[in-house]
Length: 83
Image (cartoon, rainbow, N blue to C red; front, side, top):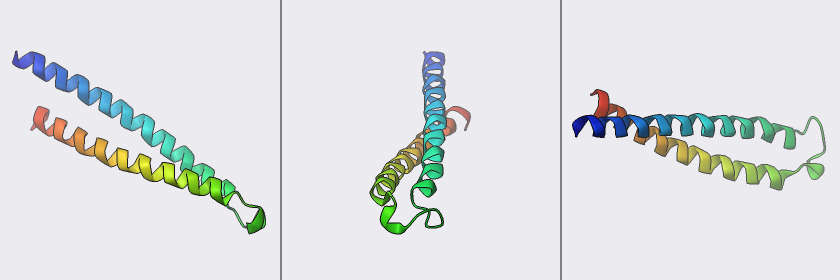
């Protein structure tokens, strides 16, 4: 029974680790996209897609919160599994 619980915890840890990897990748892409939308060296402020950049920032805030939650869950599982 104990081995089954450990296996389930390891499976969950693997799932959370993969989800973290995907979420980090998405967040990095957003971080790269925002400067292309609001670069005063390339276009006038009036012509920038500031609303679009703000929307991406909102998405980034949500992804960061989810990442922090994932980090906490991963840490708890690792501590339970490995001490």
